Length: 442
Image (tube, rainbow, N blue to C red; front, top):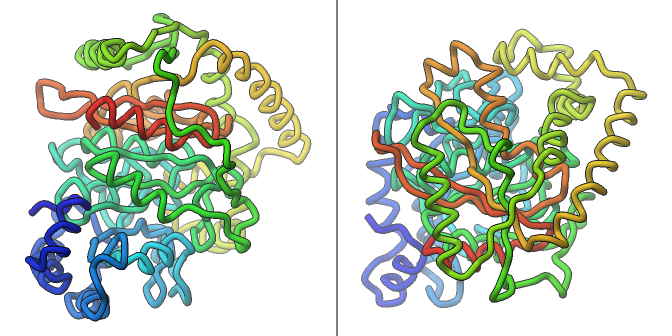
């Protein structure tokens, strides 16, 4: 079933399909045995039909997302349904939609369910959930990536046209890479986080998964906008670039700073991705990546991790035993930091941000692997901290440095598992990054 936005819009406008017919076709797939552990809550057929029938009283041309099915990470509120953040004892029933969900439904999109995640959005692996380890859509022995695991797999398995995730440290990019999807990590504040269970509130953003950049970008344009209910919300400035220069320069980490964690195939795939950029006339520039890597370490090794503790402090202090043991260990570890530690970390972050600025005089964007390698579920369970840390090598610095990013597919390993790259640039380069991804055929 072709769920791309342009295809569905064409058949709706031609009168060859109605939203109620689409959700009936999807229902069998959505409600089949959940062998990949995609879902925490699935809307019933009747619940989906309620949305569909309301749309059928309208002109399909009047709504940009008319009849488009989408999935929602279960740390984002859907009114009338539970939000669990993958912790049953934490669950509550949302009394209103998250702002982004409200915008998408108003544009005609149909919610189909709430997806699995690494508990409290803490992890890049997709296995830290009492609802089961979410399995890779292509090779189920492998991880799906996290924390937005179910959101990515739902799209990859053809259950949704697009999905919402969140991205604090890579959760909107790593699952995209591992499931051959496009993942937009927008500029922080571009999409409201009102109605999202915070991980690190000052660093959180809502992310978007889709099969194509065109679809993801369409959703981004509809979902964005300043929100008075979110103190971290901010509008895109009028001067935000829509394209990179015709003769642009892209940075890549110095050769000794690239890390593929023992994978023998992904270095060649990254080299091919670089060649594809050069083929459209771009100039490669090696950059010293050390400040990016040093910034990445601040997220979990510095006092910034205490923001995760602050996000759920009442719950963890009264229900610590209800949490996944790895998640609990990470978040409880933050209690060792003092207020003085927090300020010292913020001073270091400010210094790092200043060191990064000269890079943008040398290059227009930076290109990295999204993740250097991928692991089996068993490998992650055997070494949950180090494997997760390895997956964050190219992602953990992004929101700390206020960057925009898009993760795109970049080939396959011999076992069929996908590889992806990430294009990143300063804040509010979202449109320019999407334009470049489309120029690369993504």
